[in-house]
Structures are given as C-alpha cells and as structure tokens.
Image (cartoon, rainbow, N blue to C red; front, side, top):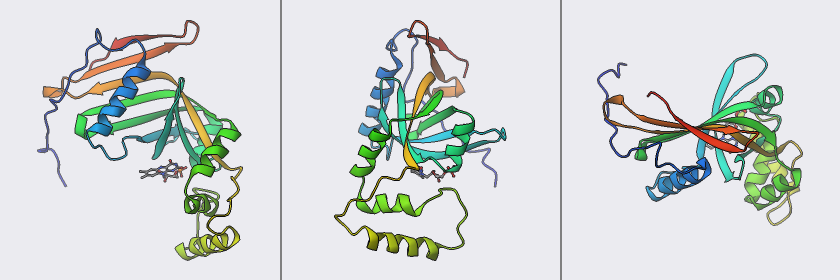
Length: 215
Ligand SMILES: Cc1cc2nc3c(=O)[nH]c(=O)nc-3n(C[C@H](O)[C@H](O)[C@H](O)COP(=O)(O)O)c2cc1C
C-alpha cells in the first residue's frame, strides 16, 4: 500500500505564544472542552508511552480520568506490562490527537501511584461488570490460553459477587498520576508550517515558561 498521494491541509486554527494562558492547565482544559463540543469521541483517550529497563518503548491507549493541579490521572492494573515499565522507569509521555480539531497535545512527565483510598473510591464507582472484569484480567498483559478460560473466570466471579454485591477493590489495580514537566500544544497549519507551543515547568519557582518549536 502506498499513501504518498494522501495529504490533507490543516487550516482550522492557530496558536500564538503571546496569547496562550500562563498556565498550561487552562489551555489543556479548554482544548478538552472544545474537543468534547466538536463531538470528538472519547477525547480523554490518550496514547501512553512507557519504557522499562529493557530500553524498549511501548505504547497503548488509556483513558484520562482526571486533570489534577499537577497533571493527569489514569487507571490500570499495576501488574501489567505498563505497570512493570513504570516501576522500572517513572518517566512517561502521553499523547492526544483530535483530528476534528487538527490538534495534538503531548505531555511528558513523571508517573506515580495515587493514593489507594482514591483508587478504591473510583473502583467502587465503576459498573459492577467492569469491576469483575478487572479481577478477570489479572495479571493484565499475561498470556492466556483461550477466551473460554477468561469467560469461565468471569462467570465464576459473577457467582461469587452477584449483581448488587460489593466487588472488593483489587490491590493490583489503581490510578497513576502523571505530573507534567512539559506539555506541547500542536495546532495543524497549512503547508506543514504548524504551530507548536511547549510549556516547561520550573520545579523551584513553580512557574511555566513557553517556547515556540519548529514544526
Ligand atoms: C479506547 C481505549 C481505552 C482504554 N483504556 C484503558 C485504561 O484506561 N486502562 C487500561 O489499563 N487499559 C486501557 N485500554 C487497554 C490498553 O490499551 C492496553 O491494551 C492494556 O492496558 C494493556 O496494556 P499493557 O500490556 O501495555 O500494559 C484501553 C484501550 C482502548 C482502545
């Protein structure tokens, strides 16, 4: 397959270093809101890149569940491949791409587990069957011989914890917060001369500085 004749011109917006807000969180929230308004499906879905001690990067989608005053939170299985990577190397990146707005947001930061109580609170808010699903998928990323084995385990757990009964929060499941060190806002422009504004955090002063990057 050859895609070299496929090209779109990006012309939906602009991004100007002089007019961006001082805090990147303001811009992040307003871009997420605009993506929601533009009917982007699951605008909070983001690609998460991690790299463990083997130096091999790996990437997958997770759902951003919260924007805090430090960064973004997602939930997963701590024993998963990504959990292993994070235990070995807490540096990670996440990326949002919203074609409808011709925008991407790239976040680079430091990952840490959130408070177990907060994870439990969120776990208990999830639908009963998703809670059961979390128990089925242990250890997430491990090899399983067949789908039938997973379905049997699901059924067995459904019997153990029928609808309406509390499913215990697994110790192996919870949230991670990515504290943002750098965040880049990318707005597609015509002729591949795109706008890129990156905010960098200074830990000592707690200030953000911005730079424009070549596209
Ligand atoms: C739209 C979408 C949303 C997803 N959300 C999550 C999530 O929030 N947490 C999660 O652990 N996996 C989520 N997944 C599954 C992951 O992409 C991945 O398959 C899984 O976490 C195992 O990744 P790992 O083996 O690299 O650890 C999602 C997948 C898709 C396509």
